[in-house]
Image (cartoon, rainbow, N blue to C red):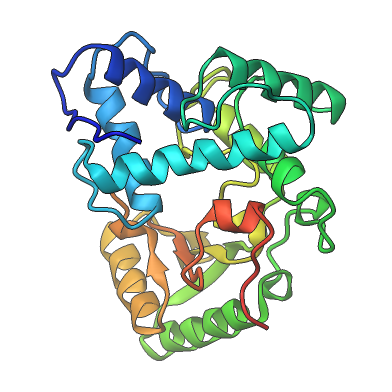
Length: 275
């Protein structure tokens, strides 16, 4: 693939359109940027989210590494669709109309809603069609036993730390079902309420048992004291967890996770944490 240009806010033209089509096709368009060839703030924010997912410097502008990772992900989709006889185009890393049509046919054949984008359920069906663990059908739970064993142990460590610091911290969500995640994603987009997540079902670490939500309580009720959340967050980091209070996109004070260095696309593709 030839050298591709650096794109940033205010850039315009065909390469911006291709960038937008690729991000939209890979289900990265959580903020509904238009595919119009204009590199606006929404395009930049979505790109930063993608870069953060792959531990690329989240500058919000393209560079050689960003282009390579993005286009390689599109090529991986094209190769699998071609192997199933659904795609007859070039393996070129561009999410054009032929790729869209092939994804739509794959979704229709797989009993999925034909969105034409590689949303999490489509990704799993394409890359890991016969999962042995069936995370997608597990129910929501507040029980730490619903988490990965190592994450559950870290959560118990964290709770012990909070008790030692005279905080009454309680788990409010451990494993979250994919169905509930979809409902949260819809909130503020096509159902009433405020946007609270950029993750569809299958694209949150909650959906894989690698994250939990906790909150400090006072007098039997959840505290709204930000200082207490920040104290709780610092103790979670001390226990080795990543705290949602440090997130760039949507700050999430109750959230804690431990990901084993995997992103959610790895998990959807069938990669699992070490035993």
